[in-house]
Length: 191
Length: 105
Image 1: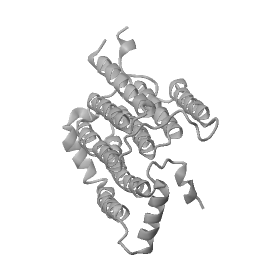
Image 2: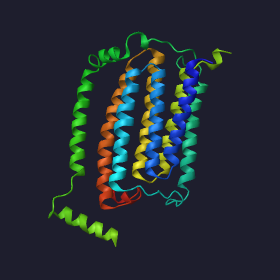
Image 3: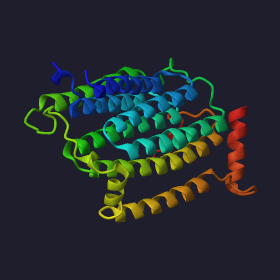
Image 4: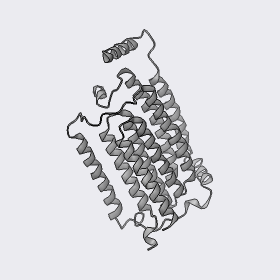
């Protein structure tokens, strides 16, 4: 059994366990921590596939920034109370959702495993064409030449996202009709 | 026998498919908007895994570049989405996805 097989099996177990934890735990904090496990497992798989830069970015951006943002919002809003999984607002929706998920998984697996005329999914050994040069250097060359326009657009996207987040999270100024409405909604919710 | 336990691209693709299905199922099951967002992250990660696996199989760095852009878009999406959730939950504490159905046209 080769080393990559061992690494794959262990990290796949971590990934799937974490994913089940995200769905099944009732406390949002536990969900976020399970998500960290899944993201770390995916980062390990990236290393196994010689995508070293992406593994580092995965840990820094996803596990570091995005999950912390989730935890921050959970703490900020105080939604640390357990979600009631028992009551089902739409009758029959949950079994149907599980059925749809299983059906989708079956569809994907059939498409992946049955099609043998496709050279990609034929199950032959991997070609190691990407790892010849240093991963970061090769990725930078492609990113800043072939995909430089898309790269610049992402800068614009991030700017718009930041502005949007600031506008959305801002409280309406006191005295405006929106603030009065806000206050009425909150007192109605408390009573 | 050794060839039987060699990790192929198909293994990664199957794992990606399982992760995507789990994320989709969670998105349909859960009511808490924060947890629904986490399930979307799961689905994005499944797609990233598939991108990198195909990129390696085909010897093309385009797969990894795509993952890079997916990461950027996911970060932007999380920022705006969490701001929306904060804005909604500040008005209606403890709101679920069902409670914002009044937003439909």
